[in-house]
Image 1 (cartoon, rainbow, N blue to C red):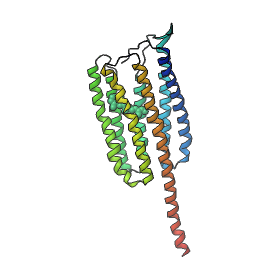
Image 2 (cartoon, protein in one colour):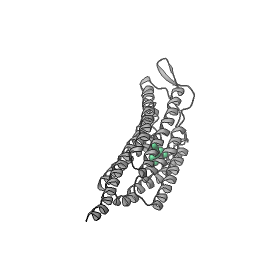
Image 3 (tube, rainbow, N blue to C red):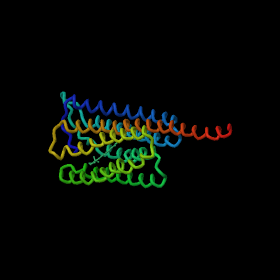
Image 4 (cartoon, helix red, strand yellow):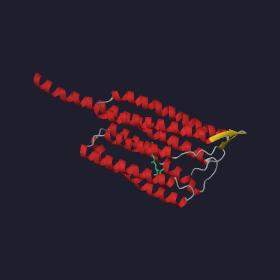
Length: 267
Ligand SMILES: *C/C=C(C)/C=C/C=C(C)/C=C/C1=C(C)CCCC1(C)C
């Protein structure tokens, strides 16, 4: 789905501005996560560091998408015409291939899952994410064969549903060991994740329904960028809040434990 059509200046600059803003937000939040990493306990700082990496990777890829967008069109007589330089979808998929497994790993490492269980969960999530994105990419590069696009899309939906299943079912059981506040925050995180993730298959399916309007490419770019911001920055901030909450709970538990011997000694 790569055949660019002439755009009016509003469509062109909307995408340019959204991509530009995304670079700034991802870059800024990456820096913030690097700094915030030090405000949580050692056990959880790895998750916050991973979110810094996720947003940094996104900032880099958005910079490439932005430059590609500038090169793909040329203003001529008040209309933006394709220059012939292709607008490369691979940047998005390359980004997802790196960021989605990392994002899922960060989510799992913030919870108190046993070492063995977490290794198994992490590997299943990483494999599912890679399958989802790999199959989606093969479908994406089918430029005319919409049936193939649909079939690869459906195949990619299987690991997608499996990831959601793990997040709700298996992590639901792990969550029973967490405090009420952590459970609440984690439920919000899952909802934000779901709310942003459903955008991707929907946007992917648009061309299948014969929607080949000039506005389609701008629409896809704006939707994917919004979903990426929610899925990376929104989820990252919630993850940080959970890490903060657990740091405080651990400190309280530590204090309670260390008070016991003191009281005994005073008796
Ligand atoms: C930061 C980027 C994120 C969280 C990207 C997530 C991408 C997806 C959930 C993509 C899912 C897809 C399907 C479920 C089917 C069609 C193909 C995909 C790859 C667009």
